Amino acid sequence: MLSSRSSTIVHRDTSHGRIACAGAAAGIGKARSIPAGCIPAWPRRRRRAALAWGMSCRLKLVRLELPTRVSLPKTFIFASIFFCIQQVEHTGFLFSLLYFAFVILTVVAFNIAGGFSRISGAYIFWYSTLIVMFGVTWKAMVGEPADSHLFSPVLDMSVYTASMVMLTLVTLINKKMDFRSIGLARGLTRSDLDYTGAGLGCLIVWLGIIFADDMFGQAPGSLVSALVQVNVFGPLGLILVTIGAIKDSGGRRATSTISILAFLYFMYLGFTSFSKQATLTPMVCWMVGAFYSRLKVRLVHVVGILLMGVLSFAVVSPLSASRDLAEGLDNTQRLQLIGYLLTHYSYLRQHVMGLAENMESNGVGEWYDKPQGSLVERLSMVPVDDELINYSAKGHYEGMAPVYQYVGNLAPHFINPNKVLFYGGNYYAHEMGYGLAEGDYSTGISFSPVGEAFHCEGWGGIFWLLPTIWIVFFSSIDFVVGDITKYPWGLMVVVWFGHLVPEQLLGGMIYFLGYGNFGMVLAIVLVTRIAPILGALFMGRTAAPPARRAASLRRVIPQAQRSAGASIIS
Image (cartoon, rainbow, N blue to C red):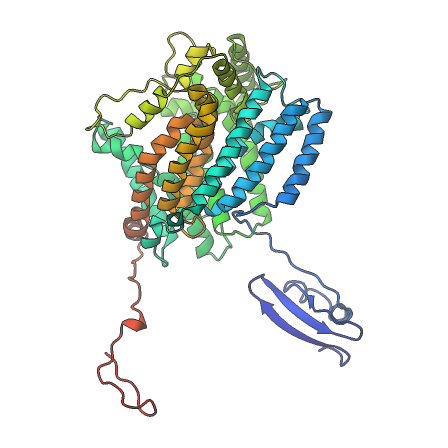
């Protein structure tokens, strides 16, 4: 009990996860807040003294949350400091000034879009981060000028900044469209969705399509071929089972038996295919699901995220760069090769360095003074765009032919049986002498959409071609997916954009307009109607129908008076 000199009212503030204590003592007129976990741990005498003196201690719960807004004043301060750092490192003044404008415009566009509450906001995040900001920031971290080892650095940064100006205008126009706030998902969603069961159902469908592909193959125009092209159910299942594990345990666990098994199988597919994208996808899906569920971060989560980072840079990156060693091997032999490379890490590093030196000798320049690893260099799109932009600026423009091809390929095979894949990164690499062998038409070379837009129409590609595609792209996807914070299937698009936005040229966006949107419609129907039933069959749960509302009940005998008697209803 407190002394008579002070009185305390203790109530629980559930919205912030703490106990609020309003203390009124002699000379103290302000309410104080004491964490729920602090009071019982103190000795009684110290507890009394703390309340009497008005001492406060707040338990700040660190929760993951998808950001919907970034502070513009803080961004201005950060960009100004970064500008000074670049000048100290002898980066060109005009390049630094353009990058400063690019960062500010990125935050403005992100806030206009509503951040991660909308697909357009997620696109802006990946577009700015993975195409420009990651590479420029890493250059500053290693102490190198950002414009070094580039053919036309000022032109590159001018193109990027102009594209962000147009992206900001497109985002503003897209937000003015009223129908984007409705979302197709609004009419299909269910408030009682079993995330774990729905996620398991998505994984079952995903595996079924994979096995059907292995058994029957992808004949042109076949059902299996169509399903393979819209098979987004695996990563979506990973996200849903992660959300389910967090919600079912009340935030005590971030994984379940189902999610662990799914993650391990995804990792197996990624390692045996020597693919960075496939290997890193489960990590990204877990983080997206944790952010969506507002997971309370604990030490085990911090350690897990750090291990993910170490695994990405130290294991996944060099292994994926060594896929040439696995050509002609089956999965068992590939696993043996992976075991040998990891136990002989020095050999693995020497092989990766030899590949980098071979590329440089074939005319493929390096942006960094020293090799930074294949993952860092893969996430740095500026140097590859620089070669394409510099080549285009000399008068080598493709025109609208690539765009016509991409749009024509949206037609199903039974309508357009003569689909061709002529334009793309491999074609552009051969065209400008990027270092590929003369007969190598299988190696994928990635350029960003802004690089290809400039290669198609020069500045016209930046000021009218890209904005036209963006308007159709954003309006259609925002309408299909709806609010990401309310409907979990939009998270799949967030993960998908991590690979689509920086590397898939203009064709990636045009492809998503058709097959991506159709795949998301199938995913919404699957998650809300079919996957919960499949999950219930395998988990032994029964999907209970939604309860009837009291409003649907009808009176049989009308009541003449309100006073006595009970109402008889049927």
